[in-house]
Image 1 (cartoon, helix red, strand yellow):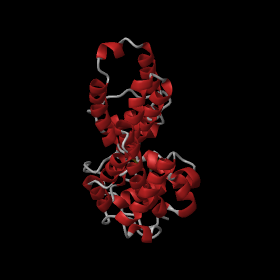
Image 2 (cartoon, rainbow, N blue to C red):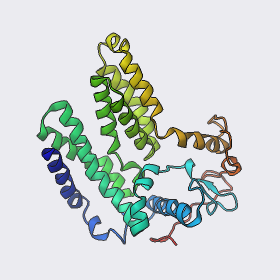
Image 3 (tube, one colour):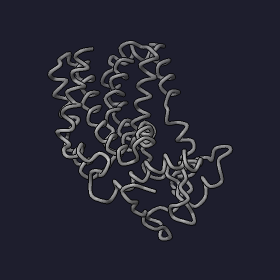
Length: 287
């Protein structure tokens, strides 16, 4: 436990240094040029504003693409980041929340990769080096420089693999449920990671679960698979997202859910819709 706390402290100290001068402007600026980062800043503000000020669903914004409104689920939702950062938004505002999500992603990405590599190699130094490489990889630094906050929460991916590995070793439901939870958090941070996991995890299982016949005959693993499937925290959100998404994208087939609000399946113009307009840029602090 002391080694884990020391490694977490190491990444907590290294992150402000590697992302400097962000730590000096937590309440007054966000990383990146004024483009996509303002969209996510507005989205963080709207999540709080819709729930606590207006008392309406955060998934539909009538102020966008007026008079049609906009289904927020048609773009990256960053739901996991917005929900976990909501206390910061309520106490300090959306700018602080944005930067807290950014900094936490570096600290936790390094730490979770450290945990995964420590489990597989039993070497603390290899784990620490892997955490540094993973947390401050060019991919993540580029996302930081561009202000692409959906791509930064990569901390859930190593935990998903770690608990999947524990599931294959221990054949217990708890690590299976945790692996599904972290997979859901990855998907609800960015849909790109849902696609990545859908490709990577089956390949990992095929390589890791050898000989396959012995694993296929183990009923405990089938029970774990059932628990993992039913524990996906993103499934309720997907059920409400798909019908409205199919209205805007006819190529995506889905059956509307019972009791679906009418506005969820109404017109949802996108940036590629000739009748739509570009998303307005909010001020540094939305009002």
